[in-house]
Image 1 (cartoon, rainbow, N blue to C red):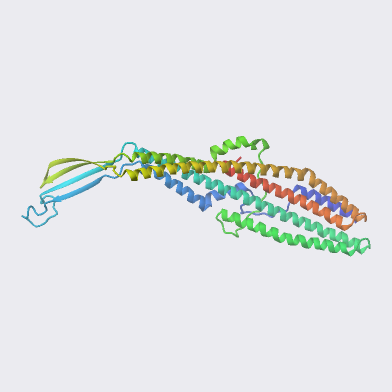
Image 2 (image 1 turned 90 degrees about the horizontal axis):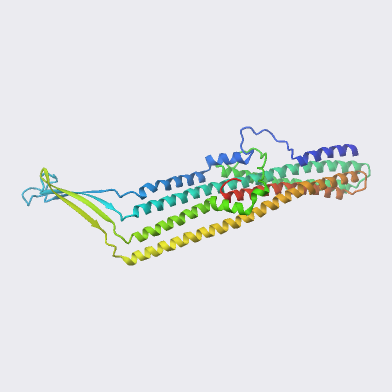
Length: 424
C-alpha cells in the first residue's frame, strides 16, 4: 500500500507544478489568448465604433469651420403696378424695375483661420478620446481574461486537490480497516472533500461571471461559449518597468492627456477668436438693376456690423479666459492622476512578480516536500491525519497563491498599458 501510494504521489506532484491540465478541443471558439480577444473586440465593440464615428465626424467639421458663409441672392420687384397704370405683375420685364443683389459675408481678418484651428484641435481631442476608449476597452479585456484564467486554473487545481483528498480518504479507509487509524480520519477526509466541492461552486460562478464579462466586451451574447484560456502574456523585463522612462512615455502617449492638451489648445484659439470679435465683420454686395429687358444701373454695397455691445463682449472674453484656465487645470489634474496611477501599478506588478517567484522557488517545493513526508509518516503511523491534511492544504494554498499572483501581475500590466496608451 505504501509503495502504491508513493508512486501515485510522485505522479501527481509531477503534474501539478507543471500546470498540465486536460483540455478538450474547442474548435471554432475564441478566447485561447488575450490577443485573439482584443483583435475580435476591435472589429465588434460598439462603444469603440461609436467613438471612432464621433472622431470622424469631428474631423469633418474642420473644412466648414474655416469656410466663408454661403453668398446670398435677393431679387426686388419694384413698382409692380407701373405707377397704377397696370394690374400688379411679377414679371421682371413689366414692372418699373427689378433689382438683383448678390452679397457675401466676410469675417474680420484671421477669424476663419482661428475657427478652423479650433475645429482642428477639437478633432484631435475627439481622436484622443477614441484612442482612450480603445485603451480602456483593451485593458478591461486583459483584466477580464486574467480573472477568467485565475478562475479557470483555480477550478482545475481544486478538482485535482479534490481527487487527492479522495485518494487520501482511501488511504485512511485502508488503515482504518486494518485497525491502524481511527474512523475520524475517514470523516475528516470526507469533510475536506465537502469543503472543496463547496469552493468549486464559487469558482465555477467566478468563471462564468468572467466569461459573461468578456462576452459583453466582445459584443457577444452573455452565455456564448469561450475557449478555455491557454496562456498568459509574458511579463516585460523588470528593466523595462523603470518609472522615469515610463513617465516620459505616458506623458507623450497617454490618450487622455493627449485629448486634454488638444482641448487646452482649442481653448487658447477660442479665446483669441473671442478677442477678434472686437472687430467688425463685412458684407460686400453687387446689385444690377433691370428696366424692362435690359440692365441700365449697377450698385455696389459694403455693410459692416458695429461692435457697440462692449459689456457683452467683455463678458464673452472673461468666459473664454475662464474656459482656458479650466482646460489647463483639467490637464494638470489628468497628469497628476496619470502619474499617481502609474506609480501604483508599477508597485503592484513588482509585488506580484516577487510573490510568484517566492511561491514558485520556495513555498511550493517546501509544501510538496512537507506533504510527501507527511504522507509517508501517516502510512507508517508516525504522523496523524490532521498533519497530513494540513500539508495538503499548504500545497493547495501555494498553488492558489501562484495562480493569483500571475493573474494580479497581468491585471497590473493591463493598467500600465492603458496609462501608456500602448503595449509594452
